[in-house]
Image 1: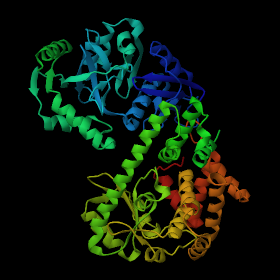
Image 2: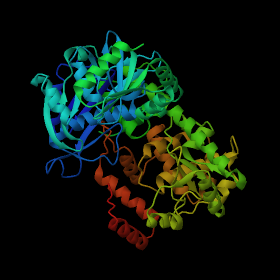
Image 3: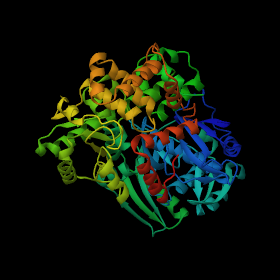
Length: 287
Length: 330
């Protein structure tokens, strides 16, 4: 394709092609400080194509696809091209990644141990990870945590952090402007703005660590903490994994070990600041 | 750019030895798009390839193994559900190749479960499958009626718990097609495999694959289907195949399939007709990003698939009904 870039994020490399220069230019800018891929072998191809015969020029509209795609994916407008590229990469990981158990979760690391947070969209796991990443933790990823099948280590996938709606203002207030991407207003998920993780998080993107605590955060409720049993944790993590079924027995073994060795808590919180205090306290108290 | 590098790699895996990164990227994108990545991975086997590629191919092999396992389990579930009927349940396509451990099944992508049962047992089969948890996918009454009146299979069903589709065939081409293969003979001559299940005889497997590729459909997934045929051809006697193809009214199609398989995956010794060359151009219409190319040619084959399936007036009525419902091709 005419416009292209190759990006490595954690263990995965993407070849991204686009019918338009704009999304590639934005990716180049925001991924400028990521380590260049060792070579140009890609695990996945992502394509940003015109959504119809005239849609390259006339009211340009992007259809996101690639090695793996969804036939009924909604087209996106060209000003949202950066988001389209990120969604294209996520789609490949969600549908095609087989080398680790993929959990739809954010993760941060401190002193060689990992805190994993999982929950529905809007639970606050992404924002919480982004905030912790600015407060002495290493951000490992805001979207996917990769659980190694053999060792049980969690590996980072520190793509750009995708901030939504209110989280944009929260992070923009404490992060230098050059780490923030363009504001994309009125997407299907509301306003979106990407944030480049801190340099250390990017530099150490190949470095995994053992999981020490699993949280199920829930934003917008009175503060509450409760333990979550093995059975419930297991079920919720199978739902949070896009490749648990595809991996078969190794996936089951890895997830069982994770559930048995990592304590799990559900936390409700009314605000970000309270959440951070609760998380830090739980982290200190963990077994 | 077309899919020739993929065809060459399947025919002679040694051709990939000198590939650079971009050539690999293109090959892998094409193979994924044509659902031949597992087959390619098996063909390349233990040949030395760059480490990044080795990971991709290993993933593809694992995916194919899992798919075969799931497909055989699904076949087993159908066999159990239909056991009280005491009839021959004949596996078709990918599941059959996996069950019979054929070369065509090595690394093959397997989608739905396809079975062939006698036409007069269709109502009972439907009833027993529904009792075992399968349910209808299509809610559209026109589509449902169309399947039941004109197609060679029941409308697709999906299992409510396992989320896997089953296609129940009573013959191998739509009833409106010009050829009328002898499904009764196919079932009578089927070969028993494990667990009360059957597969078609070696000759009938080819007749079915050829009918599917050349007498029906628009050649979508054609490179994969032709690879099946190429592998299956290695297991039959040419004379026996010709006789059998004649019985099903598919002689011309089988002869063309032999030429195409030889041209793309074999030694390329057979003379090609102009029509063969057009079909090959369609089969190879894929670029190094995995995109479909040659939109006009693709559309022509799409039109042809409808032309093959039904007489003109019926086609006109069908297309008008679909168009009113908002269906647009390509």
